[in-house]
Amino acid sequence: MLVALAFAASAFAAPVQIAVDLTDAGRHLVHTRMTIPASPGAMTLRYPKWLPGEHGPTGPIKNIAGLVMTASGKTLDWTRDPREMYAFRVDVPAGAQSLEVAFDLLSSSDAPGFTSGASTTPKLALLSWNQVLLYPDGTKGDGIEYEARITLPPRWSFATALPLRAKEGSGAAFRPVTLTRLVDSPVLAGEHLKTIVLDERADGGRVVLDMAADNPEALAIPPEMEAAYKGLVAEADALFGARHFVSYHFLLTISDQVAHFGLEHHESSDNRVRERAFLDPYVRKTMVGLLSHEYVHSWNGKYRRPADLNPDDFGSPVDSSLLWVYEGLTQYLGWVLAGRSGLRTAEASLDDLALASAQLDHRAGRRWRALEDTAVAAQLLFETPDAWGSWRRQVDFYDEGTLIWLEADVMIRRLTKGAKSLDDFCRRFHGGRGGGPEVKTYRFEDVAQALNAVAPHDWAGFLRDRVRRRGAGAPLGGIEQGGWRIGYQPTRTALQASLEEVYETSDLRYSIGVQLKKDGTVVDVVPESLGWKVGLGPGMKVVAVNELKFSPSRLRDAVRGGGRVRLIVENGESFSISELPVEGGERYPRLTRGTGEDLLGAILAPKSGRAYKKD
Figure 1 (tube, rainbow, N blue to C red):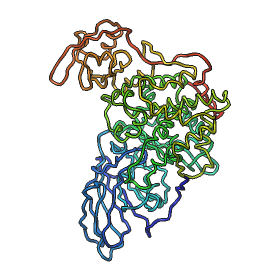
Figure 2: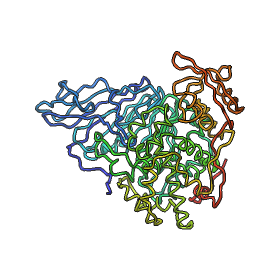
Figure 3: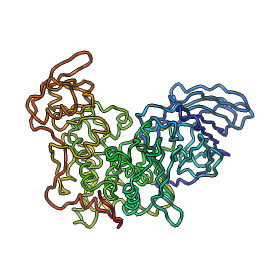
Figure 4: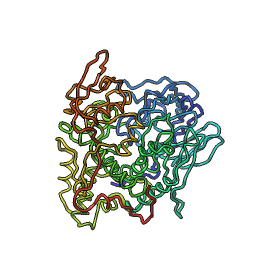
């Protein structure tokens, strides 16, 4: 099913007018005013609940305050629907042709979370339109238009994929667009904003990197990374064969005061990283795959989308059972493009794959929970803490999706004796005529059929087996048939060291089965591991190692030495002593060369014809 995202015929005579004031962003307060066409009588307005890309009912309804509705100059009484917290009822008086709505968004100052997490600082703001608007009940996203304006603090500028009508003093006015497109077009604004053109075409189409930071020095992107981002655009073109946008904006927020994540949009992406992402090599290693993942989403997730993950409004629940395609295939292709473009070296790409594979291979929750259920339950799992992650399972459809699609890629190469690969599937499934944004939905059978057209095989059986099986052990067939194998060594890779440095953790899951914070607090324990057998659990705190005060290095030294490692553990107001009989010392995952052709190397080889500088 192909759905054009061009302006749809609106059921309303005029667009909804929405004006958003960001001048109080520094104290995490955003003001919004709307004029909504209305007719006399009962009317229900809704706040967006189910958000595209967040796969759950995450609209931050708790963060709106000061809601006032007026018509013909009179303040109206409104009530909330007692069974639907996102719906507001109001009676529009006789003679009124519109409803005036005003409220404030209490933008969070807490960093954790997705778009409902911290999004504003005294120097910048990322505006997600779904957080600052209401829409008439029963309205489809493509069935109503909004005409937006923003007001910015002095000296601020902005970037967005939203089509501009005119700049107005300290703000801007945008052209009318559908509600769907408005919500799909966030705005990045700030005092320190820099734009880098990554690709420009003769028809005016561009791909740009728009960056805003609290500290202007944080915008100093290394030349080799800028070149790699340009390579990312070229490699994506070579992979998919067509673009489903005219221009694209990487919106990159660089700040320690905001939530850190990435969220896809059709013509842009909302990417948020730490302040020293370009300045600190440790931090840089933890974020190099972010933009490649979100860029792939323009093809896989926005253009091609599971039919049951494509609601026509923002209030209906979705079926997320195909997230192992939506997110898992995107994770794999993002990994591939990061390697092909030079964002990662081949060695760093393999280290990244090794770490993800080892984590999944130690997921004890695989014994009771199939991968497909992590996709179905995504709206629950996104909100869970890291504690008990091994036994509960987390949003494993990302990294396990990578392993499944890697195996499919390797199988296609082997079945066709190297004549074809998953690249051919991508051109068939995600390519097409190109042009402006549109949505082409699919179901499971469409995925299997497209794979079969590239290389005949029982792909439906292959995929169902991988996503529905229960039992120990991650699907490592792609790695092993690709000429590699996962092993363990006594020293950390550069990626592992960077992750532990940046996130202040110690990951000993592959030796004693425990992951800890810098202060000794236990984050997770692998069932049946040494740590599990002596009674360690999340929330407990290791305060001493062999009668000495805990430090990450002391614990590593003790594990490296082997023998009986004596821990003093604080559990609430109780203390206990645990002895771990350690054998084998420290163990950290790394891929080593196996037998047969190096298909992983072939997968990561550039395809665009560009030459890339490798670190």
